[in-house]
Length: 296
View 1 (cartoon, helix red, strand yellow):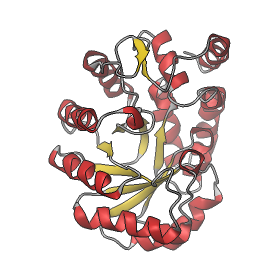
View 2 (cartoon, rainbow, N blue to C red):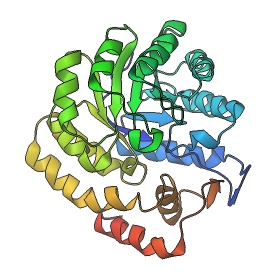
View 3 (tube, one colour):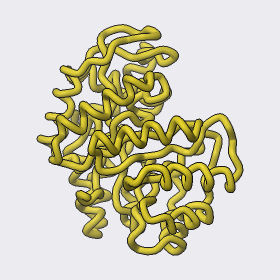
């Protein structure tokens, strides 16, 4: 398996212009975005994750995206497929498909809406790991799932051979040392919160699965490279110029602002799928100012 570390983009899913229930996917624009990342130092691609509007994709579209990106990337950087679901059997199906598509790993969000117990979380992820022999990364984002996978549950799951790490999106830096102590040095820890990702890596994390990297891939690569070599001064200097962007890309639900920003950069059409809508006009200046501040 390719080394998974550093700046990993949670890539958006380009769509044709419009905001409807069945806005069409745009694979030409996806090619453009992938080339942008190849040229900018991005060290991994997460396809069909939260930022990729996975919750609005049909299962067929989800699989089509995974297969397309895996083929297009063709080993240049690791590809991680978002295959989580709030239904265990659906997550198993998606993960099995991703394995056939030859991705490097799968990213499995905690089941949303169901509000499972810690035992339910353990059994859910254990069932997927046992059903599909592919490296799997847990994804804890309680702000969206209303479900917090506690470090003790992560520790139990880390004993399963093909569960190799976690994307921890609570923004709680103390979780880095806590999970590291419970799971050992080989277990991969990825930040899922851009605003705290620099400190996350300086405290021993392995990288970030990033929204900001969609629009500032080179700077995110440079920040991660500095943080992972413990060059605190350089890492924090780069990150300070990105902080406004980290924050303002969430003025509306992700990926609304980041898609708008990519549209302003000429890399996307104004396509998004309901129930998400294009960025509200009164928020445009907020995102634009953050883009200027970061040098875009």
